[in-house]
Amino acid sequence: MKTKLNLKILLLVSILLITMCLFNTNMVQATEVKTDETTDQSNQLPTNGMGAELFNAITKEKFDSIVPNTINVTKTKTDFVNAIIENEKNENSDIFVKTVEEINAEVQTKIITLFENSGYMDEEIVEKETIKAEMQDPLFDFNTITISLTIDGTIKSSKNVTINYAKESSYSATDETYVKNAVKNIKFAQYKDVGTETTDAVFTIYNIGDEENANKWTEKTYDFTKLLNDNSITIKTSMYAGGFGGGTPWGMPMLLHFYKNGVLYETKSIWNLGAYGTTLENGTPVNMAKLEKDDQIYKEMAKELEKDGLKNIIGCYELTAYGTTDKDMKVSFNVGTNYNGKEVKILHKKSDNTYETFTAKVENGKVTITVNEFSPFMIALKDTKTDNKADDRVLDNEPKTGVINYTVFASVIAIISLGGLSIIKFKK
Image 1 (cartoon, rainbow, N blue to C red):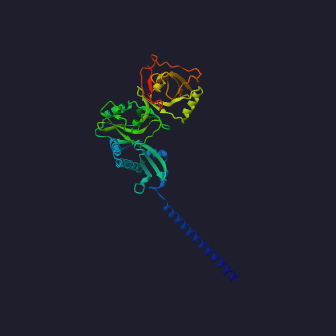
Image 2: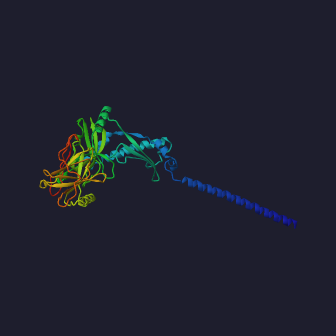
Image 3: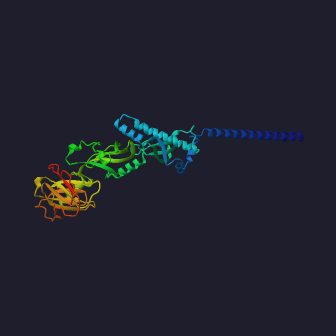
């Protein structure tokens, strides 16, 4: 009995040892399999160059420190602008597009090298699309290029860099200073379109009713050489956007390129505009836009005159000056000689939305008032039978002395049916 018992105990111990051995073997095998799986997964992680992990670690501050504020290119500024001008002459030419692409590629290569030297990139395995260099609007601004870092289609950082073009062999620092000062001294009109910033502009002025000549207006109408008195400075132009029309000025934004001795030294963006109105003697253009009966301002002013029993409206115009104005400016409206001897009332809506009214007799087909600002004016024939209210002011057509030291005349039509000239002048 004792022997059998010992055999049973020995058998149980043996089974237990075998089980423990098998369990340990399985644990080792499971651990080994898990390690292999982890290794395989790490080998399959996507990388971008030395890994997107490195690029993701680049902060905006680090990016800005690697990308310089300025960068040199092998093309000259004259090379670039001549490509613009050549492309304008031949719409089928691709020289401008190629020039932009060449500059973008040159800058991109230089930026990639800077990142390689910083240890963030390996040129052999990085996709070049990760670092991009692109001029955003080369027709408008060919001095700036944008450097961007893109990971998985998302821009992580970007920086605008100034392009340093190569110096021409005939470049002269003296000429550059001379041209820049000459351009700076040009007095442009200041034009502001709806929703835009104020920009420099030149105007070609037409008389209201002179649609025949106004319809011939093109972006080439203005002679830009008139801007400079120095014949040694050459002005070349290039259109870069479309224009617009209507009651406001119409035209094209232009790029002016200023050359001296064949080298480009300065560029300037201006509006080349056409408008109905006049140019003051001090050079300020004044646009006179005719307001129609469905215009809200026309309706408001007509209602204001109707309070005085005046319903015979001759015309309504909004005058806008694009430049310097003065006080005591004389505005003459020509209403036609058939109104000679009759009185008209002119309602002026000022910039503070208050009204002032003037009464004057028609002499030689015109009426004249003196104002301190340009804004909407409405002219109505005064009917003495229904207008019993006193006039706010009866105008003296003779100028008072010592007010303004120059006089300016302008031609405008006061009414479509009656024609005639309207004159704007400064009171002496």
